[in-house]
Image 1 (cartoon, helix red, strand yellow):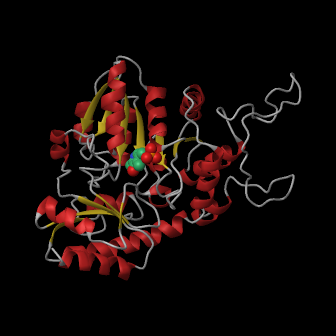
Image 2 (image 1 turned 120 degrees about the vertical axis):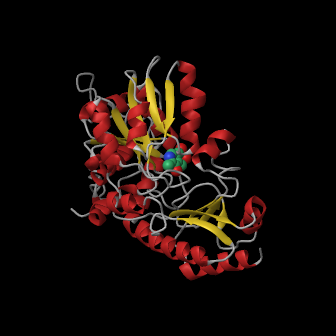
Image 3 (image 1 turned 30 degrees about the vertical axis):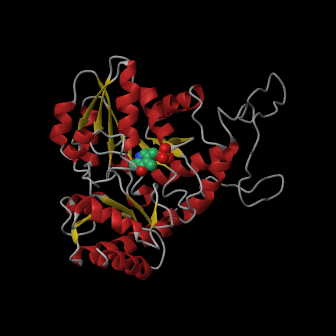
Length: 383
Ligand SMILES: *Cc1c(COP(=O)(O)O)cnc(C)c1O
């Protein structure tokens, strides 16, 4: 079936007891066993291990990402944590994109290094740099593309081929483009990670995450830590995410069109020093962005003339755009990564990868694009 059909119907069957069209919220800790001999006959025993509402969402995610299985988590970070826990142990090494969600860097650098895991934060946009970062202890290559917040792209097929030739697992954080625009598993990646908080939910209502895999073997390892470490998503969040995901394609398609219009507007404004949006021909990796995915997404960033102070003034003067962390929602959001999402990334590391003090990140929502542009216009014209 097509994506727009699967996003609505996959994972759901009418409830046999009532005919309810939506999978019920199975808000139950435990599941009654028919008899000792038939333990787990229904497939369910305790909601930390598995829950029918969560299973419905997992089935949908598996289909949308074209995987063989998936596991849903309490947050995007719980999903990344599950990948690290499943694949890394003392003495192991992992390569992580040098530009990535701030929490990914923090989990690697501040938590897993304490357990004897080594990381190299490499420029994964350059397959040669990935090759050079690999050693005989490397078990995992974790890339994020496009990356938060600079939007640097990694060539998924090239890095997957390189990982496969060394027997290393390649996991891709696909939060920014979603499977509607980009399917890493079809390009050779082994695992896909999502913060479902973002586009799958889309309505600023939940925090959740997921891992989708290309092989049963990997998914068994992921499901094992989902249960062992207690990282599973709650039934209520799974249900809300099912509801939100029914319009994923429609939302991200329109949000991307809005982002393109906003990027064109910003590029022409004299107070704007720099605009970065993958759909603009000026984007350094425009060709890879066009070839690897079927859309450019709805994330962009810019710098205004006058640096940090001017940027702060602009962010304080907007009425339609909301100053908040998060992205991918129907509400247009504006963020200052240095003080907000990436505050835990050390200054020299931020500088090295291009997260400047004046960088303003925008997540373009579903409002009338004219209103979004007018609001930016009144703010910029005051600078
Ligand atoms: C938000 C985000 C995460 C973390 O997800 P949470 O749901 O906030 O834990 C991971 N990766 C990317 C790219 C993100 O934007």
